[in-house]
Image (tube, rainbow, N blue to C red; front, side, top):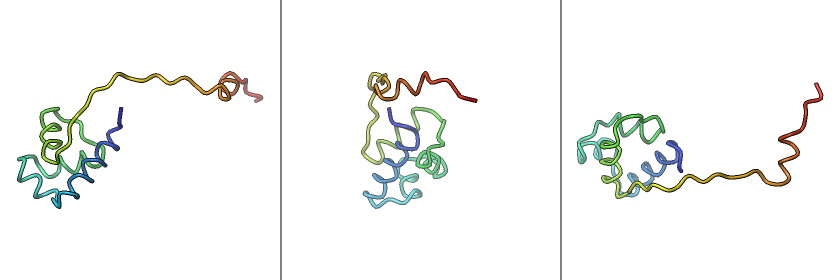
Length: 86
């Protein structure tokens, strides 16, 4: 899953590709400009409804995927179990 910072970067790129300022987008979708800024900077913790409105405003969509669990590489296993020499 993407981090908040990665999602914010995608929102910013999409907004700029559409030639919108944060203010213009906020007026179009009726979301506070500060909220858009928080999203683009990875600090938004508000409602999914607002998040969805911003994504729709820049022609993006939210996708849900199963969480992937990654095992360490064989070369890393020894380091994981190594004892400290201190």
